[in-house]
Length: 139
Image 1 (spheres, rainbow, N blue to C red):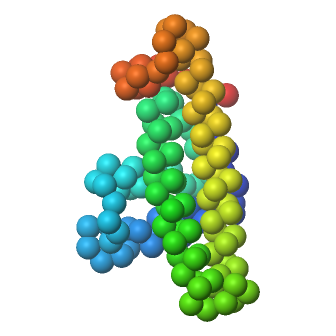
Image 2: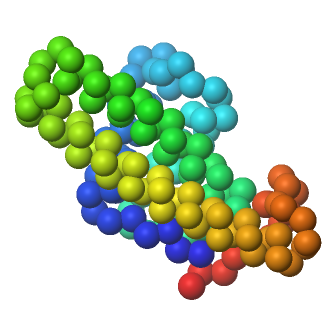
Image 3: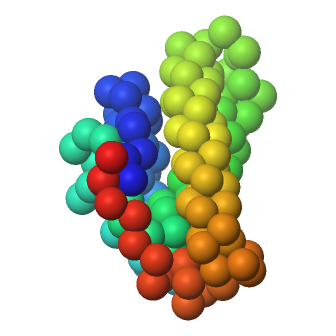
């Protein structure tokens, strides 16, 4: 399946990933190792729309983007509080946040569609095994 990602979303994702992975220390941010691995797996895919073959792969993208969104919200809040709501950094961080939340929403909607298809085919909600096994072709 194709997870669409426009230029602004790609830019926001790359900027957020850069701040997380380029920070000093192990990933630079207090995050579970799985989330850091998810982010590292997402980074090289950010050249356009994403091809997602399984619900498991989509869940990895969702975990990464949810973490990036939370870090971006914290950053945006800090700019608003420490500078001014209309400060350039605050406004830019708002737009980054807005692009990430839009992309995360689209990711979650696609995940719900994939889960529904798996449930339709198996008669049970997807589990870790079926999320890996059921492959979705590109549309």
